Image (cartoon, rainbow over all chains, first blue to last red; front, side, top):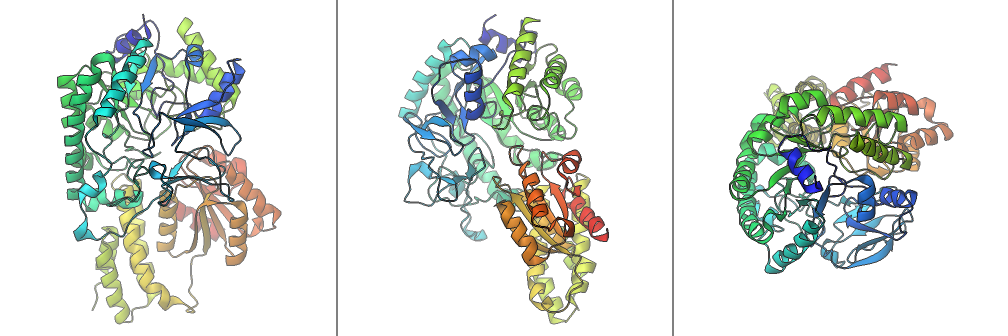
Length: 418
Length: 211
């Protein structure tokens, strides 16, 4: 069974030869560059600066040599620009505040100021205030909220749509070449085309916009889901119109060389609760999600990947109704997210892409032997009869002890060979 | 005569304008600020918190109630200067160094404030030195530490150590919170308590002050 077949079989809820694995195919299933370097050193792979494939979270590229050791079955198809609307095609060598040499997009300068903070600028343009910051002692980048004063009668949903628009011919040309390269790996191709995250608070502050207008503060956005529902409805409606037009052209360009599309990373869960009721979800999100997902299912062979952290059990039936095929990261330590329950209740309708290891309490804190037992247990529960792609609960963070990451990789090898 | 029940409802429903208008009216009628806070605002925040814990309200509703409460409180605060307020206690709160998450921390701050605590909100990305300085300056009785990241939660221990080294540890109670934080972690780093949400944080602060 090829890697691609393995993933596709799991997505069809049938048993593959062994559980497929993803590390590095999306911005929510990756590994922090610090751990990528430590793994490369541990396995004696060629020493060179790790390439940052997603600078917001400082995710490192998992190159084919490391992919083989981990046993990954998926490969990414990212867009030509990053979260800061900076071109990813040109990179330069930089040193991170923690002293690691990396290759990062040329528009990003990692030199800290005298406080030890690193500032990032939308489109790399330093003539505007910074749009993001990596404070000292932090291992990734955070948005800087630039909320202009809100005048209720002047609010226009178009202001929050400045960064969304039709794909250019150049961008389509980029995807045409990039997808060929990805498909040649023989792995399942996971595309992140962007533009389809409805109300994702990672995007609301507009880190790629020089002078953001509209609702750009995360707290203001959350309150808007209660007090400015018309604004949100109109914004989602227009954003989905743009997305469907773009997806039509993307399908013509990349076709079934892509297997999975990661469309939306809006988090609906907190550690113990949700960000909205099922009723609000049905009112604000569901119609728009459903429209895009129905278009994808009616016109393409793509499976649809939805990311939402947290305790989302009350919303899972709504996400199924909206037409999502895959749920990630399956935060198994959040309230009610008990793996056996999830598999029994939702396993027929959803593929669990994640939940393979708890990244809050096990991966950074447990002993290697505990990690082994935990990973085996998760795989036995979630991997039964397909419908599971192994990944940690979200990205592997910078503080994970390397022996724990190795224990995880060793256990995955055991499971593959069992 | 202002019907202060409407202030309770305005805060509960997150209606800032209404909360401000009723409070301004009440001030004109010379109703004591402490009465307005204790009998109406604190009760509204408590009810909001209860609804949140019961899964009947969510972060957006909590933010709206907090905003309405804050608007009303801003009208009352200037009237309370030098009044010798019988506050619940002084709290210094902040998100630890390296961490910029502030929504949960702010909700805890608002809820404590709405329930009568005197809150000094230091903001995000706060070093141990700044916590020590603030405790000294404000003679705080409670320190609340927030972290959303597994990579920053250990800094809470650094702050507790700094408070110990500066001789301030015994005069303050330390409460911690944030997604990856647990009761066991609180015990492990020598904090006095943990709470999993803003409502529970108020109850914890009240217990800690009562000793």
